[in-house]
Amino acid sequence: MMGDNKAMSGCSDEGRLRAYLDDALPADERIALGTHLGGCTACWSRLREVEALATQVGELLPRAVSQPEPGVALAQLRATLARERSVPVSHAPNASRRRVPDNITQRRGMMSFAPRFWSGPRRPLFAGLTALAMVLGLLAFPPVRALAGQLLQVFRVQDVMFVPIDTARLEQLESVDFDPKTLFMAEPELINDPAAPQTVASAAEAANAAGFTPAGITSFASTALSSDIVVHDRRVVQTQVNVESARQLLELMGVNDVQLPDALGAAPIVADIPPTVESSYTGSDYRLTLLQGPSPDVKLPEGVDLAVLGRAGLRLLGIPAQQAEAISRNIDWSSTLVVPFPSDVSTIQQVTVGGRQALLVGDGDSHSQLYWQSDDRFYMLEGDGLLEAEIVAAAESVR
Image (cartoon, rainbow, N blue to C red; front, side):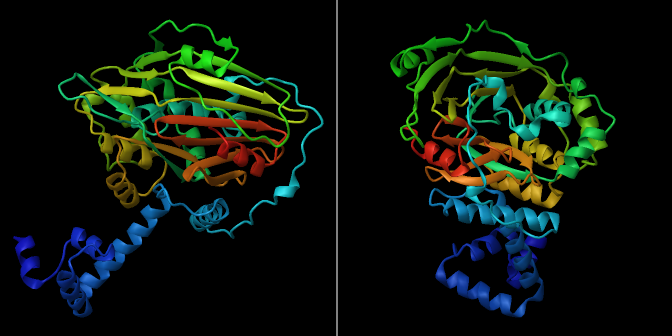
């Protein structure tokens, strides 16, 4: 009945107001609605609310392929984070502040690829968050393509979105009286028998072992003196969620507007991680390591609403209810990986690689890691002894 009254009075619902803001209404309807807005205080107020919410969501959603220059993207990110923290915006780091170390000889394995801000005293916290994120569809490859008629849904990641999270919220998660191990019925289980990492002599051999042709860095700050390629075998991991425990954590963190479904714990979650290729390049004063692989498949129990899980994850990490709802509506959870990161770490930068959104993480010295995605493949580039601009340039040369 209320909808009829609105139609009769000329008032519009949120969808029509969104279309007005997006200039998506036919000319005659747009003129009529504009005239109505001029005389209706309620609709004008609602339009401003919809516009403000769209701006908030737009700051978090992935940029279109036509992206701003990295410096502009970084300035936008820092301005957003500064508003959230209500502190002055910091200036972009001066690229000349770094110099390369005299020697870099220590080989870092795949385990070193975790960002440095995830190490140290907070490591147990992030271990728990990573586990929970697998349940909520945040860090561990949320959904992708459903297979109708199957007991489980199968997904493949196609896009990445980076979401800044207040460190105070992470500290709150760390201090809450909750054991993250209880989130699962048992420890995650490796259910296949992967081969040991295999060193190969060429990209062709790597392609034969991994099942895809790996890309490589084609431009270096100075000549690479040596290189090696290692193929890591496919891994299949499964775990089963303790739904009551997950609900308890949400309640402890004050999240009472999202209800996790019983179906989430009805069957195991299975993550099928394809083979990855690790290519390392060493120069006289630097080292670069490129890790790449197809996006994993994640199977969730039938009947699980991905948008609900995504919204629960956003709320858990401190996103306000209204904003989490708006983001959840605007994200295609069937193809998007959401990556939260601490908003007050000054060495995190949002840049672009090949016109796609990327995350650059530094340690304030000479070590950086760059994360990005292109088509169905994910990349992580780790560099020692290079300026951040040189890391981005190397990533741009990946072919």
